[in-house]
Image 1 (cartoon, rainbow, N blue to C red):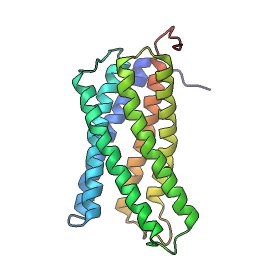
Image 2: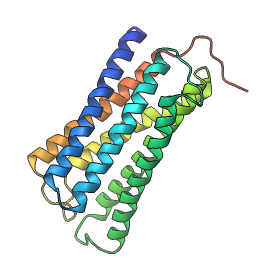
Image 3: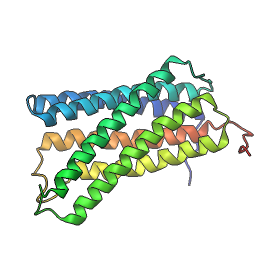
Image 4: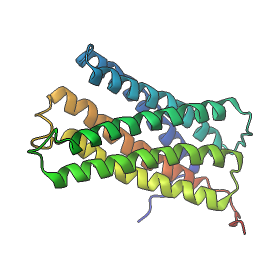
Length: 221
């Protein structure tokens, strides 16, 4: 049974959850720096969370305007800001992923379960790509909100991102024996709650986009 709510309700719920997620990412950045202020993990984790918060803030603002039926041209400030921000976030995430991958190939975790490590690297890589696609697809859709195929692609990426967010939440909270030590309760709460917010906000954004699809829109030839 599909829950039927007015488009405005979905829009309000989605944007509210997304702004809460932005605040949570800022808290995560501060927490990473507080937990490890002198080590590279703290600074890199803080920088990644800070860039993610900034990109998500622009993305949320752009999504809100799309859901209200506004059309944004190439010179729109919010659209340009997002286009300038999310590639840097993706590059940093890929750099972190690649660095860990090289370390694993070099044998930094010989006692870890190889299947668990493969799942970690696969889900993480998929989450990076899907996040990049979600950012990029919205910038294109904001200029052509009536493009049926582009809107459908955007919904598909949101759906995939929600599923991958579930996997990343589990991997961030449940340690892999031989690879990561037992995490502190505070760390589990920060990343667990942050992951759940990511899942909730993504699902609500998907529902909001579906509920506000232009009537009578037909696929382009």
